[in-house]
Image (cartoon, rainbow, N blue to C red):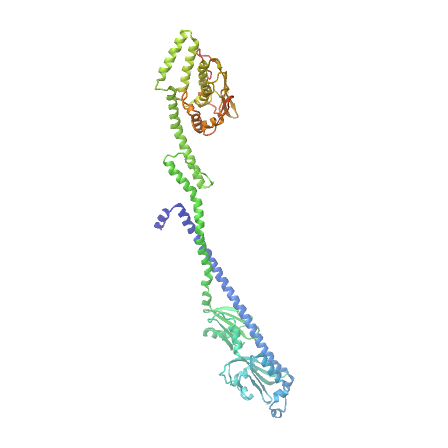
Length: 620
């Protein structure tokens, strides 16, 4: 058992499904076949028994009709007036002088014609008690005992007259010398006494012989094998005919008083005797008993035939089950195989692996768990490595060299105070804006800043650009106070403002207008950067999303490209944001950015005003 368990454990899931499928279904099929076998076997036995009953009853009916016909034939002699006159005549000696007495004085010609038509009656003998010569007619060259005195000495004569109805049936072999002097064939003989109307005086004695072959042929007609047999008995247990094979012990029991003397209405119609099944029938009290004997093992020999169909069906189902189990196992293991392949690729560093979830079962749950695990791991890697790396690279690119921030701030502060002392307020204001711009870009290495700080960065950048474009640049910043304390990824607005000025306004001589707005809209913060620059074609917009264009690869502030912003937003908000660029050539460009509104905690709320050189708020 342990080795089998080890062998099963080494199988693939597909082969295990097939193995356990057969392990479960095979016993069920065996049980079903056993039930069918038992049911069919009993049904077959009942069917065969019923067939035997029907055939025995039909045979008993045929024997009853045959014997009734012969008995009615004998009754004709008992009631015929001409025959009755011969049996009661007083002048027997005078009548015996006529050699054709029976032909002339009785309707024997008609009788002979009737015998010829029936065919099965072979001999007819009428023995008058008054001394009239007997009528003895044999169609098979047999010869009756010629005189009544000799007949009266026989046992069968006494038994006939002693019977309750004066009728007796006996089987007479061709070697019997009691009824015939010469007997050419085995016969079933009817012995009957002829009485007067008072039934007290015997007038004669009738002996009618019938070919035993008729009874044997009827019996053989219901036999199905040479191991079966039919026995026809008279009401006293005397054997009239035998067909087929009947064991000696069974025949002795059937002829015994234990069987014969039972009332025909209470006698069992079928019973088991030893290794044999016995089926019997008796129409009336005085009619013959028909018995069919069938060996029990001959029924059991049919077991193979009965079992053939269930066993064949079971083998066919087991063979047909294989492709079905293969299909089921493929359906079950295919998603598992996809999960396995995805895990292997994931282990090699491919963090973009995803398994399509097609079902909601355990396999689907495994696939969902795998997808969630990959997303979580990729998110952790992005948040703890990619974002940090990109931000550090952006900070370094913003400085364009390994410049010490404190050295830069101190230098700008010195220049600011020199310009102030020289009463050059415009240059001083520009130097201050540049200093604050650098401070905001670096933001002490923070990943996120408040909306107010991002807007301050945009304001300082526009203040510097205002010096460059003089009176051609007009801008307006309008951000709602309710969103200023919300933390967002830094540098997600300034690059769009810079792109609007650098690419939208540089080659334009007419006045240019730029507006930056921010407000709360349906649970999200909606930013819009709108300019009146030269605009872009749709294919240029599409190229921005497909690949980072060369013209956006190098910016004066941080080398931030639009695609970089989208990637950082994706990492931060996982798709829960909207970034759209709308533009018409010659009319300008609008950038719409919607991000989730995340209310800040109290400890992060700071002064949200934009300080000038005097520390007061100035909102443009």
